[in-house]
Structure formats: C-alpha cells, structure tokens
Amino acid sequence: MSITPVSELPPVPERVEEAMRRLSASESVKSLLEAIRQDDDATRDQQIEICEVPAPPFKETKRGELLLSLFRQYGLKDAYVDEVGNVLGLRRGTGNGPVVQIAAHLDTVFPEGTDVTVKKDGNTYRAPGISDDTRGLASMLCVLRQLDQLNIQTVGSILFTASVGEEGNGDLRGEKHIHFEKKVPVDGFIGIDAADVKRILAGATGSHRWLISYDGPGGHSFHKFRIAPSAIHAMGRAIAKFADLPVPEDPRTTYNLGTIKGGTIVNAVAAHCEAQLDLRSGGNDELLKLEKTVLACFDEALEEENRRANAEGDMKLKLTKKQIGSRPAGVADDLSPVILAARAAQETLGIPLTRYASASTDHNVPLSLGIPSTTLGAGGVEGNNHALDEWWTQEEAWKSPQLVALTALLLAGVDGLTEPTLPKRA
Image 1 (cartoon, rainbow, N blue to C red):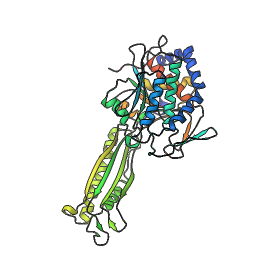
Image 2: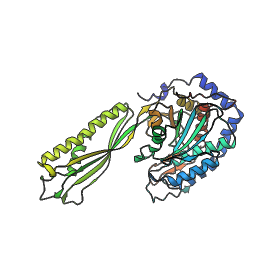
Image 3: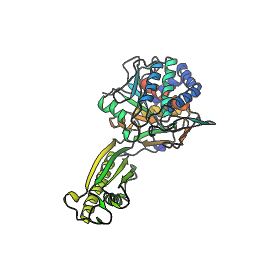
Image 4: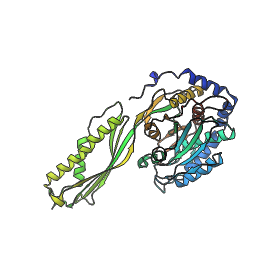
C-alpha cells in the first residue's frame, strides 16, 4: 500500500471538522493554546535541561529518572518506570473513553562519555541530541504541564510515555515491550519525533537488521595464499553480488551494509570478518523478498570462497547470520481517526500539510497491530541530527505542543464539550 500524495488526500469529514470547531471555539482550549505559546521559553529551557542528561543507547536510566519526576510533578502521581526503562503515566479521563498514547523517546545515538553540554548561538542551540528526540520530550511535557495547570479534563485517558530503545539497535524495544509483551491498552498513538510540524507520518518503514560473520582458520598471506579461504574475501564476494541489486521504488525499498570489520594484520589471511546489514521497505512483502535474496548472497559467497581454496573439514569458512533488528512496516488508512485528527488540528492552527510520509520510529509498533497511529513534529528547526554538531533553532516552536494537544483532545474528547473521535478498540 503506497503513501497517498498530499494533493490526493480525501477531505476531513464534516463530523471531525465540527468537533474541532467546537474545541477551538471554547475558552478553555483557547486558553490552553495561548498558555502553550507563552510557555515557549520554559519549554526550551527544559529541552536544554533534558539534553544535558546523557541517554546513550541502552543506558537511558538517568534521563528516565528526570522524566519520571517531571511526570509526577505535572499531575501523573501514579507514573512509573517499567521493566525495560520506559516511563509511563496515565492521565485519566472522566468517562469510559479511549486511551490516547503520546510518546517521545529517551535515547540518543551518542555513546557514553559524549559531551552533551548545550551551547547557545543566537537563537540556535547546539549539542548532540538537542533535537532528536530531546525536543520531542520537551514538547510532550509542555502539553502535560498545561493540561494540568489549566485542569482540562478529557473524556478518554491520555497515556504519556517516554520510551527507550528507539534508535539504532535499540530496535524499538521500549514500544515493543509496551505493546507486544505487556499489551498495555491503547486505542490510538501519537509520536513526537523530528522537528517539522508540517509533516504527518502515515507510514512505517520496516527494517530487518543482521549481523553477518565469516570465520575460518586464517594463515600467512604468502604461505596460505589460495589455500586458506579468506573471511574478508568471502564478505567482498557477497557484497559484489547484491551491490547493484534492483529494488522497488514504490514502496521505497533499500539495503545497506553499514559496518564491516575483520582481519588482524595486512599479511595474514583474515580468519574473521563481520558486517551489519540494514534492509528497509515500506511494505512487509517487499522487505521479506529483499531479505531472502540478499541473505542468499552470503551463502553463495561462502560456497565460492571455500571452493576456490579447495577447503575441506576444519579449513572451511563458516557463516553465521544473526538477526539484530526487526521493525514492522505498514501504512495507515487515510481515514484513520488519528490521521484525520492531526490534519484537522493542522488546519485549525494554520499549519500547511507539506509532507505526508513514511519513516521508521516508535509508531511502527502500534501501527503494525492495527492501532491508529502517526508521528508529529516536535517543533522548531533542526539540523545535523545524529551528528556531534546537531543543532536546533527556536522558530515558532510552540506550534508542536499546540498541534499535539489539539490532536489528542479531539481524539480523547473534552468533558462537557466534545465526544471522542477515536473509537475504543475491541
């Protein structure tokens, strides 16, 4: 299923538009939107505070402790840290309505020991992780803080979540734990990730990641030439087989051998070589087909390298394939209640929809389960994400928490004002 071009999206239904008109005309929601705008500098300051608490891959504990204290400070008295490190807090609704999950991720891509001190340059702030996803966490906290201060009561409940393991080999382990293992009841999902508030994610780019290893006896590069098979040569043979492999453009499908290492010295036949392989697609069928084709290339390369050396018994290379990542793919229905709510909120706030796209992030998990899901922008302008010189500029940054808040309120309903537009799942 392809992503629909923006120009071909169906109109937002009148019932959704009418509910949004009632919300946006109410004094309580007007006060909320204005309070969020006035809170812009405080939200930025909190963003800086969070950024300067390191959250390396698989080591998000300290940042999680900060988020837990802030959740409790802003009214989520029963907030807790789960078995894998996610921070969750339920803001209970007044009725038997749906549960809307709002999530941003705790982890960054930067290793332990990285200097995460934020440096100010005019209206721009520079530090590893200053935007991805520190800004998402700050935007989420702004929504929670203002709902608490203005005592806005929703019909449905809102589950605020600071998740672990979104980046890299974290493999979405936080959201997988919530939805696959604990099966926490959720009827709709709103992620906050990447700055652009003009973008709505409708699709989840799936990925399968593999650690590929060749191992053999090795030997002297001169004396064992064409006698001992080379682990590095075998890897090279495999790469050559799929380097020009044609792949579909719709859904977009890609492959990449992202890291490779092996050997010990220039004059030794390599006894070991390993590489990490990343396969991606917007469609699960295309992803599985690509995976089968590419993995077969490593098997063929093994046979060819062993055959070239006439290797027998203990002299033969061995191949190990270990899956280290699996992110499900999927595409939301254009009439999904979460998509419609986000579009209605953008229209109300005067935010044009310029990108209706697919990406790989926390919403992959709930979307794969049929839970209406999207990811919205965290606000401001960003650059050089995942690099040491990552930067973020405070440019109309309040639009993100306004957008997230309006979307969530439309879905959950506001007590005495609107009913939820998000159905409860069976």
